[in-house]
Image 1: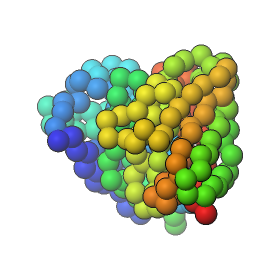
Image 2: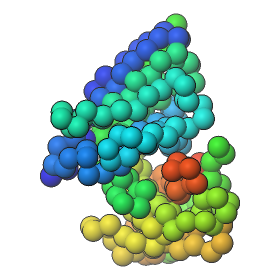
Image 3: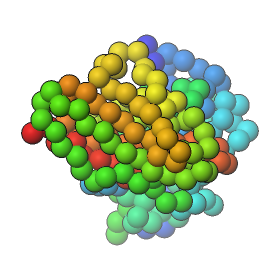
Image 4: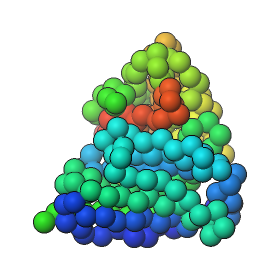
Length: 118
Length: 110
């Protein structure tokens, strides 16, 4: 059974850093593209980042470029999102997701809350 | 990177059909067959309902169907049921190996 279990959220001050983790089971991260998607309180979904199967290609929404880094440890089968220089507008529930071959997210993590506030 | 355009809300009575539209550009919806639809109930993670414009994942009711015409995709829910009340989001692959979501539509079953 495919599962994505997230950890690492919390409260951080503006300018601070956090690393989110997404532990995959039931499949290997080397076989699928993965993504991070966020949802600000009471708002819609926003795509944040993609990473390809071997981790060589990474893509980001403009608002996080240069501040966030998506990566994965294939040996541990864990996806990460390193978030630096955090801003109040980064406050959201962050989801990791696995792509079906068609850039559709067929499995999602449970979500982890990131709050940026002084 | 502006969101795809969806109506903020739609409503329908049980047994009726409703359609939610999702408008983009030739760089996303109009250029690729990678349109998806997600259902999200309050406090839950999104659930994939439609992929590649008009395909249903295993386990999704055939009351849900998708289509596309030009730069606009649509989700139709037939024989509306109470449990269909939720937020619905479209998404599309966009050139540059990125993804764009719609702003979301709240479906109310009257």
